[in-house]
Length: 307
Image (cartoon, rainbow, N blue to C red; front, side, top):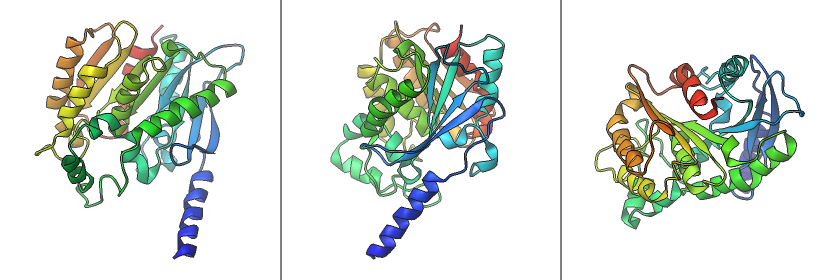
């Protein structure tokens, strides 16, 4: 058993370290292989730089979740991508947004759900509710949490205490919160929301696409959305200094989101957010996929990074 365990660890390590580098259509990608962390499992980081990247300039930084899905559909599991390089390049060239680099943070595979699920709201549930949720399965029967425990506080420590300092040392960045942004979709939308609430001095803006407010895959007897609402009421950052973008489609998994997002919108208004610093958009007919997110990526990018 010990030999089998060591073999599995080596296979996982090799898969992470030697994963094919994404080939962008514009700009270039600098790979940081298997970034080590004392907080979470090691993972690849793909840093996208625009064509005219120069150390004589300073760049805003956009941290994006699910980094392996952002730039190159030829190596993704579903042959889809966000087309981040094409979209950002176009917006920079048309002088629509400020200069920016994109840090694609790969998800941890098996740990994705426990890395991305906001920890403080989860831990505000009763122990019985937590235990019940840990036994939930996806529609295909696979465990939602993959037999792990929610650890998003550690994931955020990895981003803020380990990854951001490395990015700021290695690249020509603007380090302040006004030029540091975070984005993701689905569970990646949840962790991006959580990040700007937990670290308002680090992140000045968040884009949360198709935010997975249910947390699991059913709304029946689901206590999760309410604890998210409670958390936001207490922890949203100041609307005077932060910007937040939400959206959702109407098909597949996104069909669950509208009534939940509407409750969040009420909270946003009550906390003083207006169309100057927050927007929620509905995309009729769009589903829960990279092909849908790529179509509208220019909207949150323009909202957060506009000139």
